Length: 243
Image (cartoon, rainbow, N blue to C red; front, side, top):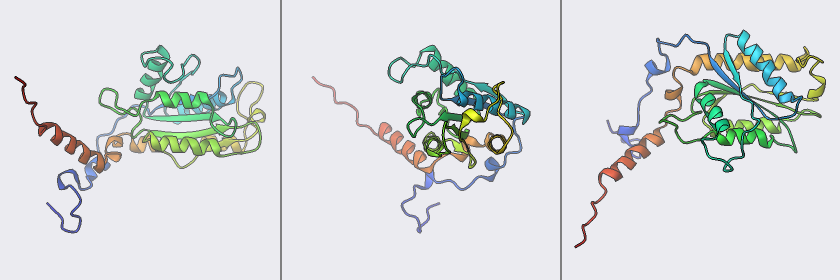
């Protein structure tokens, strides 16, 4: 039905809120699937150690986790998308229902290794499904000096751009070299407690949103665009045959 108060809205693409889709009664029972990415290839990579610690916490919270090793991942445009490491990463993204991104801060920003992983995740659909749209995301960073939030701020921008449901909490660990013991386990303390907070929040948001993720990020503007593109194709004038 047309509404005179909003004449610029395309009525056939404008939908009332469907509470049945927001609050489904049929929900999956499998463990939340979380993919964890880190941003350094050093032998003792603190971003990797943080991710491994996060994975242990997530598993205790009832999640299934997988950690991607970026070693061997080519630069974007320096290899085809069928490169084995690219396919491994994309398959894991498709498998996941949520992600953790953890990068060191280098020169005031995330590392190239972290950005390369994100850049290999396409925005365009794979098999008709956008790889990241509607999945949850937690962001963390480590630094060698005093605490900074440059990298988590950048990761948050990327998460929004990738249409991920980026949770409010985040973790930034200063002087990371002093936060891990000789067995590469994170020491107890405020920084560790914050990591637990972030993983707990990620698990909750993933359980809360994974069933209705596609509906949550369904957009009026894209429904209008799809309708208009279809109309253009259907009404495209036929080519005039030449003698």
